[in-house]
Length: 531
Image 1 (cartoon, rainbow, N blue to C red):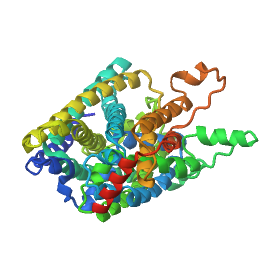
Image 2: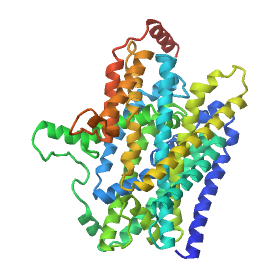
Image 3: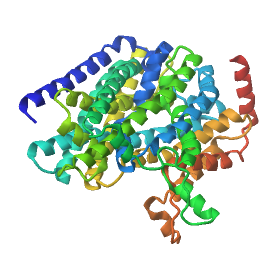
Image 4: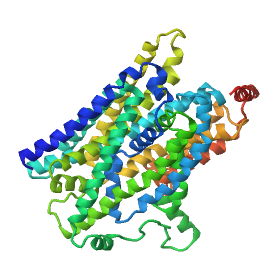
């Protein structure tokens, strides 16, 4: 890379950072109240909410993980998950969003206290916070992969594991601190409007990359077509062995299948878009529940072509490097797209696509930080303040909570950076999506119990049920070889798309056995009549 090319790319990236920070910091004056900081006073346009939901979903893990899937599998089997995501958003729009607007919640877990009691609310909130910190921290290092390849190109050789770690860790710290700066100052408005810009950068990156790649492939679409492998989209997972058990085993232990797409993905998206403060908080900033529902459903429809485009990039990369073998092509498939960006893209465009990777990382991170601060403050700190505490003190709690969670996420991110630097064969998407699967099924089950029943569930029963659900998922996921320790010679390892489904049904099956106290039922009915 020439010095002039480096300067051009650096200027593009610095311009991106300048725009994002400027927009984020400019929202301070509109975030002077708890309602303004957390929900933008519920005055955000539906199209901006839609963009923010997309930015929260499409992290750097997707930016590089989806091309990784297309490159290694040479098909769109991952994209079939969109079937369940659209179905789930429709369910969420008619089942959960009206309830949250009706009860005027800021933290979703306030509704659980209304229905069951304070213990369920706090346990659910803690579960969300721990899970989200771990899930967010594990994906942040991905944005530094392109930095590692840039250093490798500059020094003319592969980067060793220790250097990779320091580059990953440095990127985690810088990206997190910059994001925490504008998020803590500008609140949810800063998150949403910077998300809008980040989605624009993302689309521009896709719009350039696909035709640029295609022009470099001899034979164009004909060559690409020969690269694609079956199943192109739908994978029904036909077992090689005969018998029902072989079929069942294949269905529940395979990651990308039509069954996981229709059933598993539906439950995954119901949890991430129905009971996860991270995403739902964006939905609640819309002017009313209809606009919120419309933005939610449309985000699922728009998400399919975006994810499919990312996968297409992976397929195109496979065709390109088959036609133009590269001696120093990274052995890890997740690094192939960044490698192409660094070695083949022209100056300026390389900076734009790099900014696109940073945009996805910062978009999902700002969303997480704001949601974590909202849940922690609203569920644990703000209720303890005196009723006459000034609004400035409440906002200070929210801002310092944002900073605190940024520090926690940096800690997880640095550890993940070390792990991934020394374990390069681990795939990105199962790692990131799998973490949510351990706990979000139990959270979803408690919300379903609250919405679909009036007399079932109580604080003690809900906690016991959630623990049962989490333990069941951990066992069938064979975490730390627990099945072998239990004497099972051939482990049954549940694939990551099914974890939330299992956790939901186990938790719901246990929780429904417990009755809601009569006094709580009467309170809930009286409140519903008032609302």
